[in-house]
Image (tube, rainbow, N blue to C red):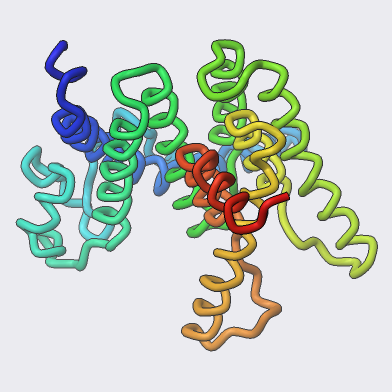
Length: 286
């Protein structure tokens, strides 16, 4: 393993290749976790209401059900499951029914591979790099699910929170007290905005998943890091959200998930927060 420590480029390439494999699994999580959660909620409701269980097959699990074409059910061969390369080899279509394959698959794989490579270049062969890769993977999965369903499942945000707090006890990015304060400040900041907006307008401006996601990000970046995360996410969201509404011909009343913008800003803050704050201080000294 010494050669990984000596050559940052080799380490980044290895991390990127591993990220492509993780990205392939994240696609499974993005597509299969929401239906499984929905089925679980329905089963719980039926149990409370003393109704008979639903007489339908449960959604596929995340690990053991083989990948298949959602159009024709064609079970993918091993060579059809190679991240990015299979998509290119198949020219973006199912080998059996020629149904177009969603762009989500190569985008998620490429983003995860690139994120892992950047984490390796930033932190080297270290615990910080491993935690940053896990952080990246969960944020990408949460982003994909929020974009598709406007849900941010506890199954993602809470493990991310505990990972951040554990990293704090080890002093990976911040110390334990800073991690706890960041988690609390992150959650309460959006929680306060939610209730203020609801009291003024009578409407819900965001979901509880956003509070939990920002709390989890705060465990990694600390309370001081929450401010730039909120600024960056609002800035990115205003630009991207406006362009999306314009392209789709929607009005401003159309709900837009906020989680992807929090995730993007939180990732940037973890990797380059110190540099960005130093750049800000250079142009706007206190």
